Length: 342
Image (tube, rainbow, N blue to C red; front, side, top):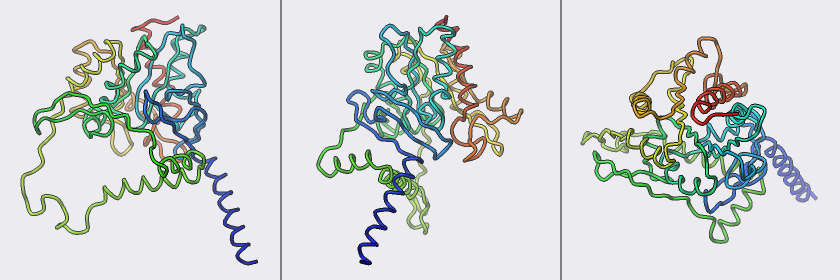
């Protein structure tokens, strides 16, 4: 009798936890042969930061359904800031941009293809597939300093490579990954996609594993280069060449949405060398760019935070509803000049 009650209690606890997790975070994923791992068509629930339910269709597009074939397509590429599971479908900047371009008509369709962890190398590698499938009239590419530096060269996904420490080679190796193979992996994938509880456990385990790699060792003897040795070389990234490759990959019809430097109350936005190089090169080459550093500063002086939520901290994290509305308006002004509107 006691054993039966314990088993019943465990089952009831798991059911309650599953129901709670489905209200907190649940994001099933699917393998797409053209895009790799993307959110499964349907709804993604996320209340970890901010809180929203977002809608996704095929090929990793954030939208109820793909637009009519005669629509003028604007693609929006980017990382988690464009993916934006923190805000609702009507609040994300891609929806705001679509409204700004269309006015009273509906010729333009802005397709949100944001995906966490992507970089400039991923966008260049994906360009042929995206152009063939969507035939975009214009492409907005959201990125910041890390997307042009370490994250574009870390060999995770598409990446640039180094010939020697001081000799970069701008070649792209496109690694979409692979669908789950083997009975165990397929079983884990099916459990992850059907159970919010299991998905959250796996997500937290992966987060702890990533954080453990960043934890400093307890003893200096375990540190690399302990006791001296040659210092690591300073990576001089070919920022201008990366930008030129990116613009060429999309046939020159590109607007760069430059996200850094971010602004926090304790650390006011201050442009880095990479920030300056990107903006200077874009202006010199006549490349469309919307840089947000000064926008962060202007709004912070008014006490307006474009990042952060009520369940996190203001001026920290991803763009909130005000941030997305501001960015959608800025992009609307820029693209009206570039491609016109109704």
